[in-house]
Image (cartoon, rainbow, N blue to C red; front, top):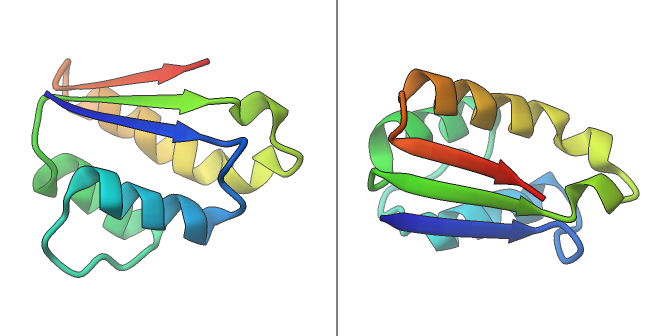
Length: 89
């Protein structure tokens, strides 16, 4: 199982999140660093099953910047029917 943890006390902005996503997901292809590329990676390019943990997002001073990313993660979790587990703490 692929385990990815994103600690938002160390993530500055969306670009930083995407860089960490690429590193943790071990993508070997170019990544577009946008919502469509994130969806494509989650639903077809990463190793499944996968577990994604989002830590400290509620305390990020600009957490609203990440709302669209979280929406994509939630939608992918639903679409993948148990192959992707999203945990927020």
